[in-house]
Image (tube, rainbow, N blue to C red; front, side, top):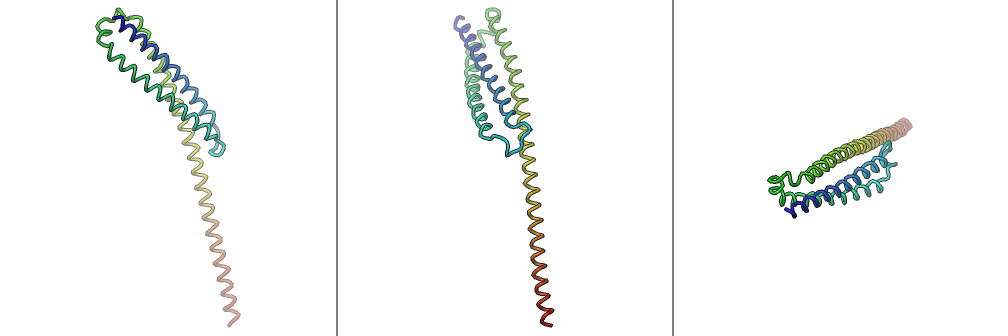
Length: 165
């Protein structure tokens, strides 16, 4: 029973650590937003943006480790806790509160990620449209110059033929 209480405390501590990591992810999402909001592709500091992505990956890896350890601990204590809820009431309430807070933070992260993804999609779409417009312009100019070159050559051939007659 004592070890179950210790395990529950470790679970609470791990959720606290997860909360800190989720706060970091929220901050990194905001920093990424600042990197990309209202900017065109060439004006975005992609190095800074990619550094933030790398930092987020590290935090996510740590969160996965915490989740795995939490699941392992839960499997160890679930029978004892479900059979004796009243003895662990305070710790269970704390766990429930932490899980609620972490769920809200997770939703906030998802919202920020989606916002950033939409902005980046817009940047790329605008860039693709600009490239397409430039290609169309280049093709039109190329066709014009070919047509004009052919006209000049034909005009020169026609004048040579007229001179021979």
